[in-house]
Image (cartoon, rainbow, N blue to C red; front, side, top):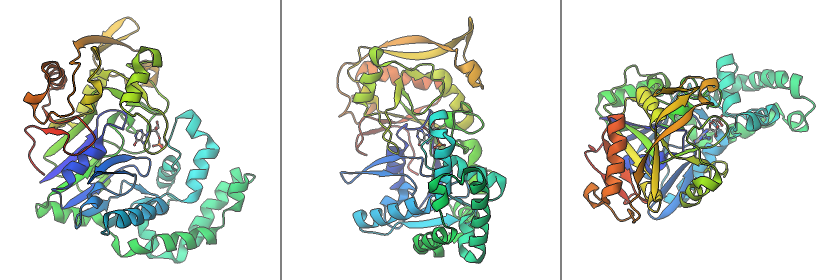
Length: 425
Ligand code: IMP
């Protein structure tokens, strides 16, 4: 039985909590896209963790944690997380790495900084874009290359020579030594070398054997490289559409697909956000109540109302069988809640999300309002235990998207979850 979890908005939907909850029944947990730009917040046995690179299966002893081909790996972040988790959890995570996964090397982060992507796109500055760019340009270094390190110096040297051509005046680039990078790299990846393999084959076997598998999406549908709000997107495929390509198994039989959405919307970085609230009209209140600050970068997140138009787009890309609605409790003390049902674009009412930034930017939200419940949902553990208005809100979202709400989260702890109609993985 395979279950996949996807973000339905611009990331930060609370996938960390949901995947951590589901991973406790899993035998194999797979990250299939992105890299250390992801920041999953997990509360495990009362302790809070922020993890970026290792799949959440790491919290449970004996669960295989696979980094599939579609992932980019920062070896230094991976090692640091591996050591920290080993230390704090008291067991070693079982990490398996696809030989086809690309590595983020020190020059990728520097390039992103020098090229100004932080300011232009609002990227996380983790070297994600430059590493995926090298993959497409066919000069990337893959995990499998670490098993045959003899030509690493020559290959990294050739890339560095190109970079010096454009950026050689920058002292940080001038200082980079090929030998230094390779030595440090090989020392850092030492514990992982026996675990680099053709993970597509391993995953195919595991699927055929009916292992309990969890695919852990990073970022969200609206940040997808092709179908997100381009160019203000990440560099990988973030939806169910991209899953098969990223793990290397065609038509992966993923029978449960959980689309995770926050009860309101947030975004970090640049780009259109039709339902955004400025600080005076409620954005700051949501940010403070929801602790909406990036796990990876600490940046304040932009906040706004739920957007059903954007969510319908995410439904099309992921075909979820169930929704996980998170942070419902953050709306507990809001008197009137708004939900965007349609956009007005240059005078015309539309119910679909335009594919280009040029058309999305002028879209104005058309709202429906819901009375708030003005009481705490934090202790609710069943749908019946929710206030009537909160149930009406959840039902309205689920009906509009035509997907049942199978998980409702009312707090960061794993226990603070209402599970309704969800089959264990
Ligand atoms: P990059 O992935 O670092 O290249 O950043 C591209 C865009 O995706 C920026 O707007 C980032 O803020 C956003 N982004 C990347 N990863 C995440 C995430 O895990 N959560 C939320 N936003 C993200």
